[in-house]
Length: 241
Image 1 (cartoon, rainbow, N blue to C red):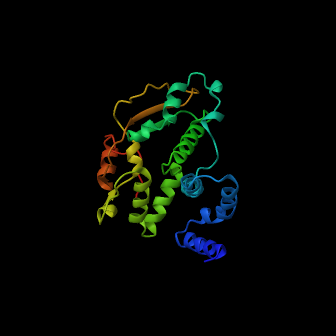
Image 2: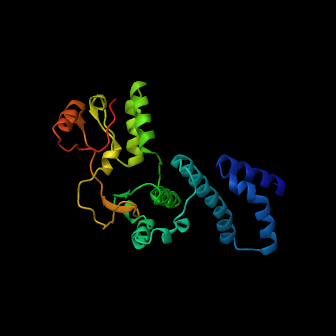
Image 3: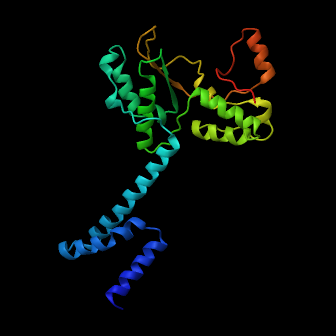
């Protein structure tokens, strides 16, 4: 069997295994091997490393598309000098994504224009590059999308999407149409914050980290009656289907 035949068969095997990056780099890799004479193990390692890198890049690109982050903002770009009372060490600790591993939530609280969105997007980018799935949305978009889904008969599917994005378990069966479920309830935590924060008018964003709360469920009628009596709701966000 000639060398050209073996080469073509090898490319066919790579195409069958969908190792497209290896197939693209096969010819120059063989030429380099002829010149440098690496060991068989080193040659195979270098060739497969190309495929691994390409696979990781495709996955990163997919996570970035799913995240829908509105801009590329990093923590390195954040102007801490403009917010001197912001706890920089706390922000750097959040950047380690330890709060994600601990299944805690991060709340950025403060007036407009103090950098809450910048920090949220920067942490989102950090999480995407660390291999986590992230989804960016605003409260207005969440309410509008969920309301449209309810009117279009897509309530259950939308709840499953929000649940997957928030890392929670969605409701099943008819309960989704009778009760109000929102992943946002995970962020309406009434426990004592684990991290200190400062919050005053015109001041820097206050950052709180707290353990994940469970999903809350309350019939809409009961929620309205509780609100009329001044009783605290189990969730700070509500959308009527």
